[in-house]
Image (cartoon, rainbow, N blue to C red):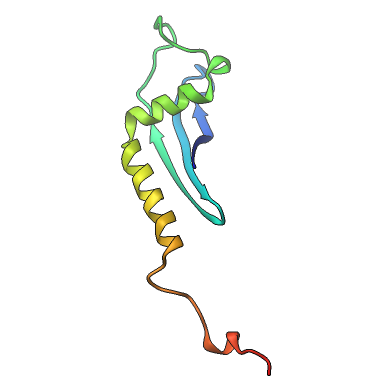
Length: 104
């Protein structure tokens, strides 16, 4: 299951225009887990524009829509899904032989 979210937004102090959004995409499948983070810079918004959304009225979904307009969402989801699949069937296994000694 993939979950998209916003971890932080940076805005100008005076105009309260959001200029940077920090996002994440997290995948969980049973005991397997992976998370990717990213940052996007947004286009400058005019607070006088008719489609301007005041900072205190912005939803997480609106910020995610802004992020999706700037990144390749499908590529991120494919990469994170590939990582989960590789965790399920690892090609390489991390191990030390002396840590797996069975007591007789």
